[in-house]
Length: 400
Image (cartoon, rainbow, N blue to C red; front, side):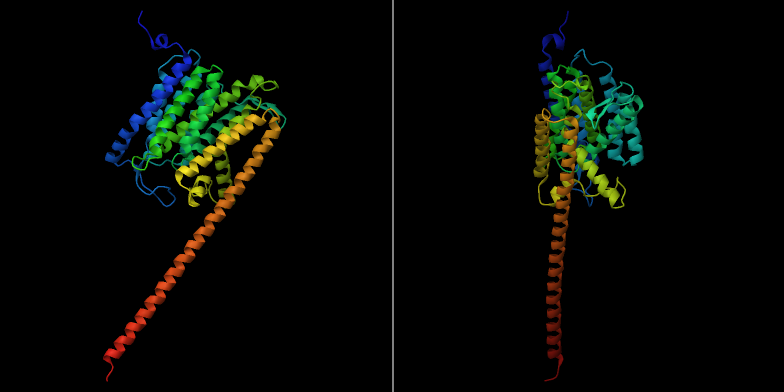
């Protein structure tokens, strides 16, 4: 009998580690090829007024992320895959081609959301992957079937678009995705859900390889919608499955993850809060919630003289520190109390963002005032020079 990969390396932990490393390797090795092809074919994202980059840049980093996840995951058979992962990959392929088309030819929001709903329904309805319990938040426990289907599909679409929205500066969507998938992957691994752990850590490995180039100055690439849609989709699957696995322990006071929904929200706090704030401000200002602007937190940080790397690392730190704090506080507070804590954090997020926006407007006004003062001074000098030249001309032509 010929040996298989599984017989050569029977330890599932090592298998998953190998898969993550291979996903990283594939991402690192394939991105330079994608950059060269994009340059040759002119498949570049040209900067516009609201862009944070100044030169044309390839936008197909999501292709490398997709390849790394797919190849890394498919190496092993963990035996606990079930029907979920088959349908997850079906939805991921749908979103991959949606992203490719949107990166090549911009699609309308209606078409994009319609296809996202289909991809989400494949796992929500097809695998019964639902948020069926709110763990006592505001006294709410079990959720009726139809309501839970609608709620879960809404969460999928919202999170897919949230990751799309935060993909506005170098490293942000990729780094937050890497942290979130790494965190969920570690929990799945420790609890022996090997297929989901492998999927999560392959995504994390692929994103680590992508960040190497996303932060680069000479070999830069963006993930594009191809990448952000896939990241949002997979991380939402991981988050909902994380909550689903903890439903049986929802009322067990000794469970480590009684507050599973709260922990999932805090891990994804940056895309969730940013989407809530941006949509709210746009609507209050009488604009379409889908109208592009520079109201995102990452844009505010950049416009207040932080670099892309500094802004991204600040938001990484916020994610990790708040997740650690919430994980520690879960022992002492109920889910409802932790929910009020999240609402408090949301208010703080709005206040900080408003302060940064005011600072940006003041800085812009100061620049405009300086520009106007310089222009006025230049005009006065020019007027004086013109008057002097006129006087000199009169003296030269006047009779002695």
